Image (tube, rainbow, N blue to C red; front, side):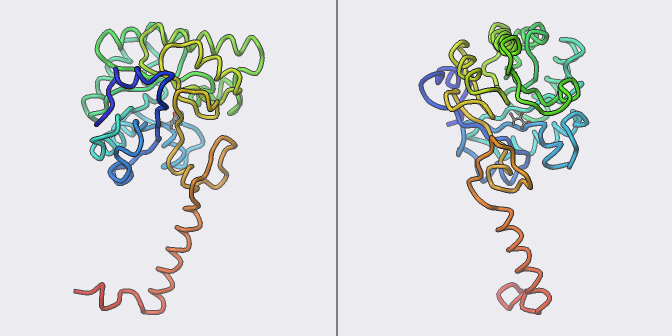
Amino acid sequence: MMPNLPSLKARKGKEKITVLSLYDYTSAKLLDGAVDMFLVGDSLGMVVYGLDSTLPVTLDMMIAHGRAVARGASESFVVVDLPFGSYQESPAQAFANSARVMIETGAKAVKLEGGTEMAETVAFLVARSIPVMGHVGLRPQSVNAYGGFRVQGRTAEAAEQVLADARAMEAAGCFSIVVEGVTRALADRVTAEVSIPVIGIGASPACDGQVLVLSDLLGMAERPAKFVKCYADLRSITREAVQAYADEIRAGTFPSADHCY
Ligand code: KIV
């Protein structure tokens, strides 16, 4: 059965929440129900479109991929990322674009990056029936402000800001937050100090759940990040399969009688 907001929130500290970032119908259909939540992340900018960052990802791109994933999901709860520039201007802008995502994709919730500065916006959305997942710590949409993708919260002051961000997201009404790219000690504190489920990536095993990008955990990435565990080597498997296909075409052994009408 597909989880819902109350059932996900009730799992805090009791049962781990499994989350997968993915972007297409075929994967969603294959993996429906294997994890609690599908996140259609704006990481698709890099993974699917070969962009340097998530910043050029548009709302239309998120809606197209969100719709594809939602079509394949009847057991996993679907969350779609709001891309850079689609929600930071004002609560009204965030509502208009979140409503488009919910209506046009069929997703159950949106995710946005931010902390104390986004609290008013999150409260505005939640009060208008848009479930929101927060995203604190390393926020990829802020890569230019950081000067690169860097682990966040390494100083006491920076750690306090991440904690304040997480508390602000909780107080504003987020049903869950992602904490990304922080020290394990800080992720432990965030998880202990907020009452909503904290989903970690590059964070800590103590988080209430974990998220990874599907192609990363399948071993498709050329240079996986330290926080990625590869559960398969699909890079090699895919290359070998395509090589065998090409070899058989050249040898005239594909298609065989079995593949002809
Ligand atoms: O964009 C994304 O896929 C994400 C997750 C990795 C948390 O935000």
